[in-house]
Amino acid sequence: MGYGKGPTFPGVQAFVAEDGSAVWVSTAAEGDAVAPIHVAFQAADNDAVKAFYEAGLANGGTGNGEPGPRPSYGPTYYAAFVHDLEGNNIEAMLV
Image 1 (tube, rainbow, N blue to C red):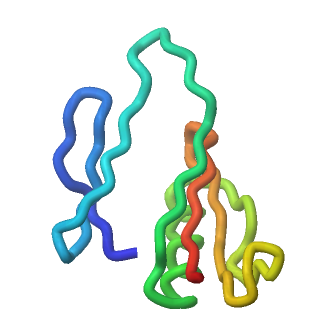
Image 2 (cartoon, rainbow, N blue to C red; image 1 turned 180 degrees about the vertical axis):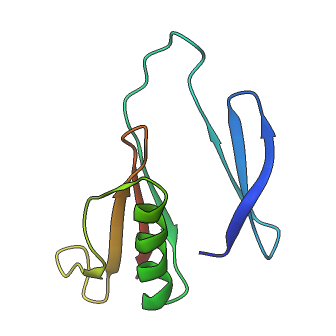
């Protein structure tokens, strides 16, 4: 997907792309209840979606939708979904 680990602060992790753009993910304060979320990242191509899925599974994630077309989302939509260790649904997609 082109993101690598960036700065880390208590309860916050940044993921930085090669172009300098970033996604910041924060967790709830201790004791706060948080429902799982869905985050989608735009992929460069189908191979990036496949690599995302394989990396997610290799790092302890659970498959929630193998790489493939999603015609109900759009005529060219291609995506994969992985539940992370906290149950969040992480998606790589190509529109």
